[in-house]
Image (cartoon, rainbow, N blue to C red; front, side, top):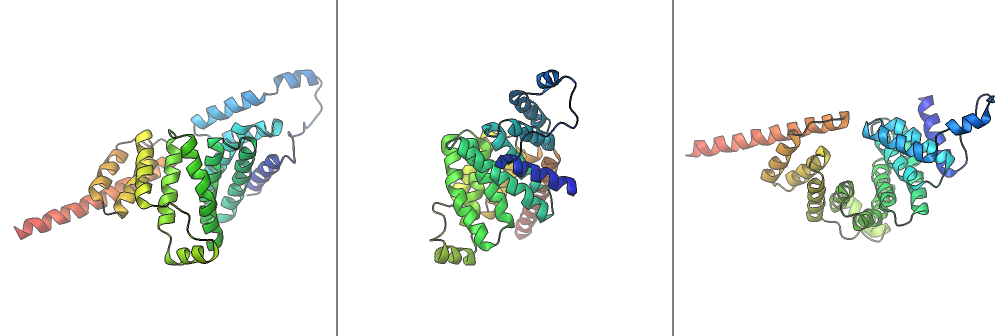
Length: 284
């Protein structure tokens, strides 16, 4: 636990530019050789990308943070550190740990937008962080987060229309806002000037379908799309998407869990279909 908070605290200091590279424990006998051996920012970014491809996200985050200690305005390191902080934090069940990672992610994303105001990755990182922070906020904070998220999630698909993850995030935003509870709608109307404009379940389906079309091998997109289909009572379409999903081979632990959920949903749909067929046969 202490190690976790040390890691997150260092990340916060790095993104604020309050600390530099870690001090050397003992003075080297050959400082020039140490400088030559120290990895450059470019090398650290390359190492971080390689670690991400191997799904070593904590190690990749450490590399991006190391790059930021050398060059605090490195755009790639900032937005990637934000996304990784959200993913890592989201795996914890403890809200204190989640909150610490999400807070660091928000700072990284905000800095990325300062460095490159029209960078699609920065807008994506900001929207992703807001969506995850919203799960920990009170009602007012949650509704404010969805309201603030709107501009970023629309902007990223405008700037980068071929980015599947951006369309998934847009689809989730549409669905969540369109399914505000009565109290959430009332609070938004009384205190926030109304609900965010343009949210629609039909647009959620379109966005999630777009994400699935752009990257049909990502099981998360199929799962999200199938759930929205089910909530709209479109069982045939949901079944087709779930069949595609269960045929995919999960690579990570997260994907394995989603694959299990897809299989459970598909089994439930198949049982329901068999009962319907049985009832019709009995009526003949």
